[in-house]
Image 1 (cartoon, rainbow, N blue to C red):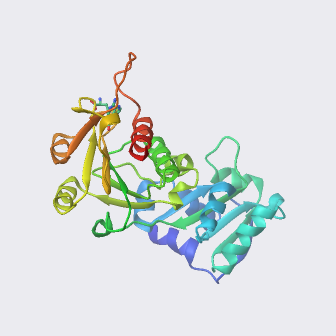
Image 2: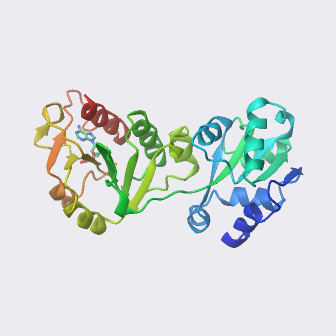
Image 3: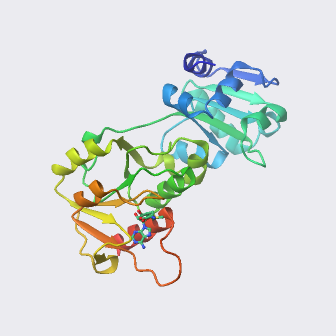
Length: 278
Ligand code: SAM
């Protein structure tokens, strides 16, 4: 399917249309499956969420699915009815499917009863740090979707809403990242940029830029945080690049006493956000 076909199959229909689907060869079902591919997500700006919990989280942020597929046997469960009604009210597509079709849509070992489709939201770099937020988070070339999803969830848990992806980052709208975010993908504001554009932006940013680095000169526990502070985390393999390290006001290290030579990126982000809030 081309990106145009995918978009048509999921967005061109009478508002609030309901269909009962028993064949995995149905176009709308094929379109949802095609969103497994990064290039299709990039071209359509659509993404897929598995499970009712994340869809209800989205609804609590006033975001209804563009399309929803749910197991016909679960049609009378209250959360399914709520999600289907919200999709109908916003003019989306409602697909009641049998177990075989749902099995084709789900990537989990124990398939969820609900799979829904949303439009991606990206914010402009011009708006990054322009609100009255006291903490911002930037990730340089984050590569692991599970790490990224966990970081979105963790940032949401610390009420850090603005997250900038710098360089060749993994897709936060990939299934694994969305799953790991546990619904927080809908609660945070995502930005993305190249390293060069970030360095330009950084020149006009009046806050404190704190890089986290294994050989940072400052112990994170003694840093004098101020608002706003931008926390910068490095790549899983290479850490912070030399250009990025040079652009930071401070380079902090999280003290380690065991044998491991570094913390996992998501764990280091959690520790840093916690410290920045103490
Ligand atoms: N080999 C990489 C290096 O030399 O930086 C390890 C990268 S580490 C797995 C991923 C990121 O987590 C780092 O770039 C840094 O942002 C953060 N990090 C992990 N452990 C850290 C520590 N002890 N102190 C400061 N930052 C840490």
